[in-house]
Amino acid sequence: MRIALAIAISVATTYAVNASAQEMKRMTHAEIIQDVLQRTKPLAFPRGDRLPIRASRLEGLWTDDDAEVERVLRELDARGIAMNARWSPGNREKSLAEGLRLARLQKKLGLGIGINANACMHSFCNGEERTFHVAEDGTLFYDDSFSPRRKMGCPFALKHRYPEIREQFDHFLGAYKDAGLDIEFIYLDWEIDGPLEWNGAWASSKKCTRCRQSIPNIDDFAEFQRALRTLRCEMQREVCAETVKRYFPRALVGNYSVYPHNGYRYWYDYYEEFAEGAPFKADQRAKYREWFHEFSLTGYTFAMPVVYTWYPTFGWYDFANADYRWFYNMLLVATNACKSTPADIPIISWLHWHTTSPPREGEPTIPGLQQFSEEKYRELLWHMLLRGTDGLMMWCPAEETGKEMQLLQEVYAAALEYKEFLDNGEPVSFAVPSQPGPVVSGLRLGNRVLVRRTDFDDTKGSISLDVDGRTLRVPRVEGECQVLSL
Ligand SMILES: [Zn+2]
Image (tube, rainbow, N blue to C red; front, side, top):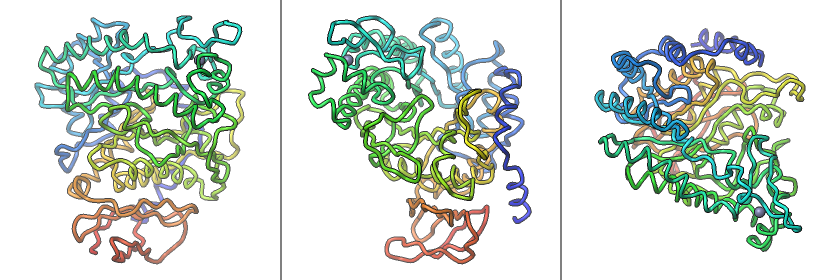
């Protein structure tokens, strides 16, 4: 165990890994699949009905040979990994035919049918002038502070877009329904479109006569946020979630970054900037934003937190232990979702290990930034599972897929040894220590508790945990789970 730990620490790499990955030639879909299969092993413990791992780069078909597709689907399934179809309304007949072909093969093999339907949700802000804000003098304008490629319009001028976008879902959903192919999982990665309150959005809305009429107290950020997020939820509910459930009432449907929480968001997406004047909670140099409670208004049936190594995170904290800068923030994010989500709503978390969204050339960098170590990333995954995370979903550039999947699948596979705890256990701790030290998570099943303890300092002794009025003593054991009795 000690030797294994030393090796794991020695592979903690600097950020240079990412740059070399970007210089590599783009991998084809078939190469990505091959890389994933080579780096992962078939499960030693069956997953039963636990959710498979899904990944943004394992989507769509890569060959006309059905026998080859079947072989790969079987190999992936043996490893607990599933393939999604990707719907594209811009290429609807070809994309539908491909999706149906994949789904028929999945049905034949007894596998679940999963869909990336993100393209169907685009775009509410499609660049038409009637979607724009209206200035005092009657001129029309839009907000390009989120992306130079997206003309973000007036939140109150988008309703006419609903039918066209809903039809994009209907087209695909109806065809699957008619073919007797039941969808198990369907997700969006809907980001820069529709009402968003960050970046320049607040300033733009204050200049718009329609926004000011619609939000009487527009100078109050909380009220502005509530108005915009309520509309954003309505769009997701009326256009996506309700449409999906009309065809497939039992489908898991959700969107990237929409999940129950405690009123705060501990991370920023790559396109988001803090809106000056908005309220926040400070933690060292981090500004945790107040967040609207969206989940219950969207109609989604699973929660989708985002647990990434966002580049700026490393600079927020002063912890001398570099790994704890990543681990602390990512555990805060994951714990927030686990603690706030009702037990009957599955939590399928997005994950990314390689440093996420690094600066482009010429942009400021963080001195001394170190890539999150593989060893502590695997520990993070254990703590997420032992706090109630149900499913793992991975985003990454094509070239990173094999490595990312290797790390994820290794923990996923090992955790299945404790399937009864994962399926039926209750989390015993949501604590996230504000200084590097021992971190403990556990799942209780009757008088037994499956525990993981990860140490970020040299604390040698046992840690006491209060479980239902009883004291559980957790000794330091590195890189392994413990089953303790209460
Ligand atoms: Zn407006």
